[in-house]
Length: 65
Image 1 (cartoon, rainbow, N blue to C red):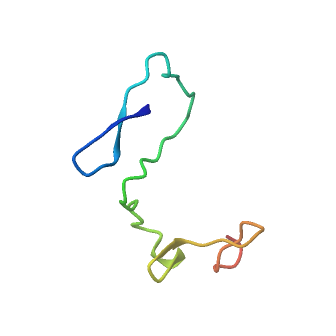
Image 2 (spheres, one colour; image 1 turned 90 degrees about the vertical axis):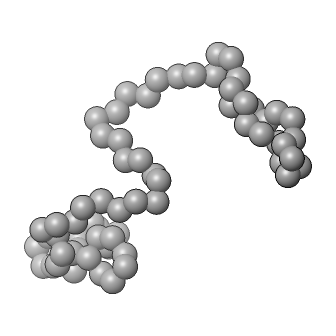
Image 3 (cartoon, rainbow, N blue to C red; image 1 turned 30 degrees about the vertical axis):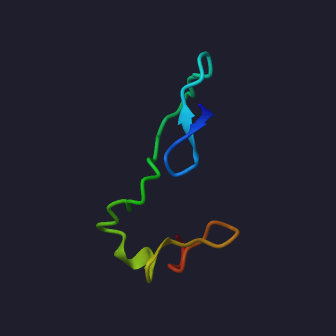
């Protein structure tokens, strides 16, 4: 994508750029669309509104995990 002509609000609109497409090999994809995964069964790992927290060593608040 590249920025094109400004729209009615004055902001440049993104337009497709020919030849800029590429593939990325992945084993999992998480769509970042302001949704939250289903944590059913992992309730003990959640801290408030946050997702699962781990320290610098990857340890959670549950001993041994």
